[in-house]
Image (cartoon, rainbow, N blue to C red; front, side, top):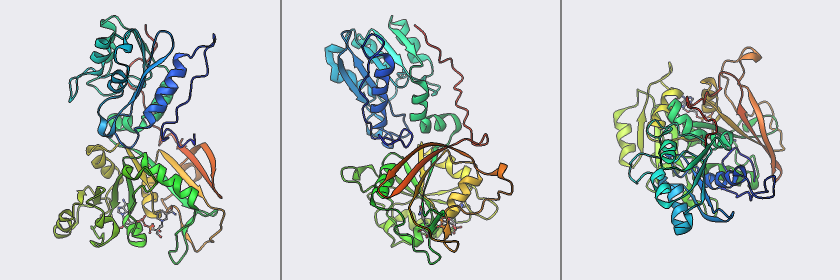
Length: 405
Ligand SMILES: NC(=O)c1ccc[n+]([C@@H]2O[C@H](COP(=O)([O-])OP(=O)(O)OC[C@H]3O[C@@H](n4cnc5c(N)ncnc54)[C@H](OP(=O)(O)O)[C@@H]3O)[C@@H](O)[C@H]2O)c1
């Protein structure tokens, strides 16, 4: 599976075998993580969870993953598939089963009622309503519980959900497609297409696994994009489209507004947008989010991210252009970079991928660690994670993740 960092479509890795030949808890958790990845981009504001039920004699009797919109939960799906075969089985779940009565009965209760004998969990839930309580409820009922299996992988998969709950903002992935010399357009603004069809297909796959996609008004005006996911079979996976547009200049007859009744369109404005303009957009089905401005009247990135998180967005894909990318980097709010590079050189008069953001010393640069690299047709795709301490995310959940019986 191409590694964008837990954005896959849920490729299932089949267990390889434990020391005595049988699959281990870790192997089954890998399967559950593969299932969980299927929900990314479709379950916000909920986490994307996977569950595999394995009988005492080592057969898979039920599998499930969080369904679009966040319900049913993965455990419910797996239990429904297993029916009576769930009795005595081990459930491998990527996140602590819930124990609060929300719109559906708690999953901890469902596992108990189904008679599972053991529950293996990757990660405790940071949600205060759940944290530790689901595990405690299972133990009270006499079920064996093991926690922390593939914890790091589970954190990586649900980084968006974790950041949303812990920091009140979504995971931010910045995607850029450039020439070898880091240009996103020629001096005349010609930019379509720098990368080839295979790379663009990967770009659409990225869209499918994010809750929202953001561009600046410069890109909306220059390209008149629709920003939808147009991969065959994934047309219903278009994320919410978000345009950073300080003064709500987005043309009312553009492709984004024309499709606002099919795919949600949100505009993030600064505090000085005209009321009339906002109303004209709202009449066309656009959600206008007016947030605190920076000194220049543009929406502050931090404030915009809070507003998006308040509406449930856990994974945001920023697609540029250069000014918006620079603003996110200046705010130290890029967690991941996916960089598509085409084998062409545009030259110094082309438009740079990232606007200046005030770096005088190398020590002040935004720093990343390379995580993955692969070819997409003639282009190269690289993924980086933020490694600068300024970017570092403290994901200590304040709860013990040690293994317990
Ligand atoms: N190859 C690629 O990967 C790629 C991707 C996207 C775009 N592009 C190309 O990039 C070009 C457009 O890039 P661009 O840099 O001119 O425009 P941009 O980054 O898309 O938009 C910049 C504009 O967004 C508005 N904005 C609102 N809030 C902002 C904030 N907090 N920080 C920064 N800007 C904010 C500002 O206009 P207001 O103040 O008026 O709101 C600003 O001028 C086009 O040629 C497009 O084709 C290439």
